[in-house]
Image (cartoon, rainbow, N blue to C red; front, side, top):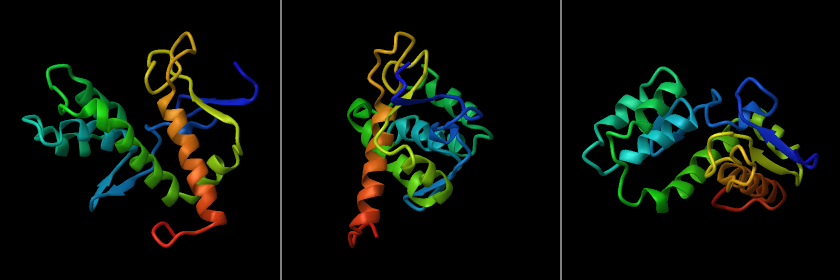
Length: 160
C-alpha cells in the first residue's frame, strides 16, 4: 500500500464514510435515499422493464439488500448503464458530501492524497485484489473533494 494514499472499504473501518454503504442519506430528484448504494442500484433500472424494482431498492432495509437486488443477474440494467453510471455516481457522492458537513470535513482533510477504494473484488469502482483496478469511486471522491474545495474558496452562484 502506498503511504501517500488513503485506502477505504468497510463502513466500520477508517474512512468508512467514503463507502457507498455508509449511513448518510441523500436527496435527488425530490426523493430521499438511505445511502448512495440505494440510489445507485435503483437507477440501473430506470426506464427499463425492471423499473418496478426501483421503489423496492429504495425501501430496502440495508444497503447490502439494495445491492443484492440491484446485482441480481435476472434483471438487466438500462442499455446506457455503462455510459451513465459514473455521472450518476458523481451526482450521488456530491450530494452526500455537500450535505453532510461532518464527513465533508473528513474528505477535505485528505488534502491532495490519492483516495482508493480497497475492494478486493471490484476492479471498476475499486482497485481489485491486484491493486491495478480503475478505482472509479476513489477518483470520484477526489473530484468531489476538489469541487468542494474550489467552491469553498470561490463560491459560484449555481453551487453556493
